[in-house]
Image (cartoon, rainbow, N blue to C red; front, side, top):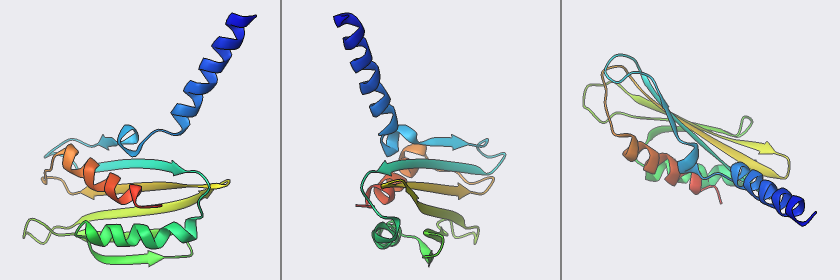
Length: 136
């Protein structure tokens, strides 16, 4: 009986860790470098938060990361922005969404670059997680 209780406690602990995964752990990249557009995505859950209250913090973090054209849509709890870093006029886009999820908020961030543009995933992961982490 003691073994079953210990195993159940460990399983529940792992399940909690899986739900509370960090921005870095949730980071994913899709696309083929130099061939197709690349999409960098991540998310993080923030318990006991309100989407409306974290939106301002997220918008300020987007500005601090050097994005332009920042548009905050309070109705959708979304932020759209862009960067033009190469001098070519080809922009990279960012969307950050704060969704109410029960008593907490899930913040999703998606950064897209066009085919033929390159960056390192470490730089993008750091920037996105700086933004996502600013929610509180």
